[in-house]
Image (cartoon, rainbow, N blue to C red):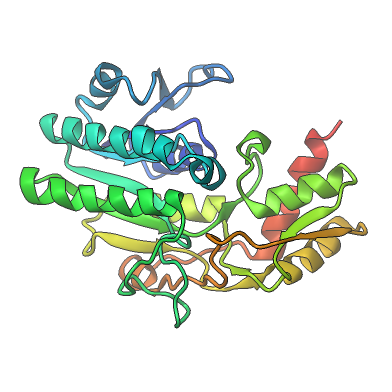
Length: 306
């Protein structure tokens, strides 16, 4: 049993990771702003704090064996609007966190990186961890910079670390305010009777992973010593936006109007990520297929829609 801290443990993915770590038998604390309110007492210890408050972060990190950095103060869209925000918050905050973790004797830091955007456009898919990353967006550039700082702290301070390149996690309770995740964005538009927005001609391909599968894969590494410093966490299958629209029609049973807009220059055209390194080493693969996962997401959205 490990003493674990999840930074961003009230977020969409971080909360699932915290729950999965508890399910694997670990003691878990969750550090976040808890802007929607602090949960009642349970198996996960909530710690309220601001990520850029180094005193608060140090107090939360103290005594932990493993720290999971799953907090991001920007989305791809907000980082695109002003790249300086990503540097001033995510990159700066990560550097502070890693220094604190090294000071406090943390055994390992795990980081939620990007499984698609970080690679950019690649000639060969699915994309393995051996591919040279070519990030095109400020959000992805920041993720790669944080991975590099982890290697710096491992080399200079002995802080062991692992980066999980997680590809397009989706599922119930993905927050509408974040405007992130094309599957819930599509399904919320359909629930509201609005057209879905497709960037480009619909041929853009992504690799989608159900959030509980992503969390289970991350938590499975807690009891083991990873052999690599980077792992793709993905389904290994690609779905185009046109195919996703058709799946949304099937899952919702509704007609879907589509509005086409120009594809932004920083969008990757085709991204399918190879998870075979992780599967070979840890023996775990995703369990929820895209239709089932979209159905669960749709059911949650329908239930929440007035």
